[in-house]
Length: 333
Image (tube, rainbow, N blue to C red; front, side, top):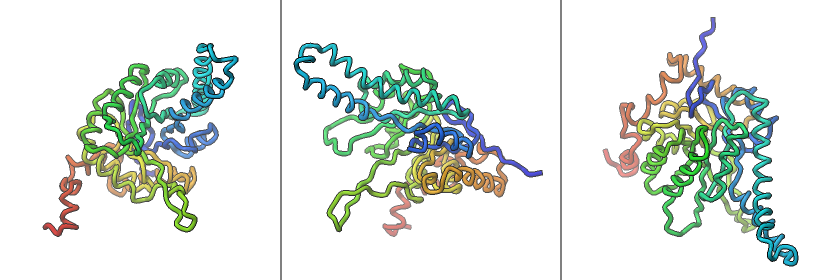
């Protein structure tokens, strides 16, 4: 009789059948693809993000066109308000229908994703998304690297989260950037807002330069296998201090990396690039690899080894601190 490992894990308020979540991407933008992801073993999916900028810029574009017809619209501010609202509602309606269609086809949790940059009126979208049937919401909060003003981004994120939490009762998670002066403080403070989960970390668009045509081009689209080390470090350092779920994101390319993130304290991982490179069926290979490692090590459930290599539980916590950098490059020790 074949011994089976228990891969179940708790993330947000869900009992997931395994730790593999498909992150927000074009693979989660159609019902057909999402059904196939579930069939191949995905435990949850994060829908492709609806972008705040996308909605607001489209509304702004329609308003500018309307205002050119001065004879019709010059004194009718109510009409302009209608155009503004109609454009936003139309784009949101497409997203809500996507949620409804997906929920009819799959059983695993559907996490809607809002890519946001402000705490403006878009927050009412969250309640609509909940009503459409989404099981949870992931706030993918983007920070503009060219913003040179003195802004308290931590407070901005807290304001966004507060507004959304007032609007919904389903679990809310936050996908964070690692670009904060005091990252540990920021993560800990945001974790206390009432959210159910934190995703570490967002992976932003990276430009490159074509030295032959002297043009700006897109950098590497997919994450590298080595990019997992940054979320690994911070999950290991903070997992024992955070009272909400943690998902590791970026650089998750093989089963060993999934195991490492769980050992560090993650409840689940978000996979994207590995599926672009290897296909949807690769989820099954990841799960097979995790199970094989568990049985080889004598573990029969994910909970048995979760967090064993976190900062608090590892026998060598200094390995996560700066002293190691000094040791290797400063010839200390």
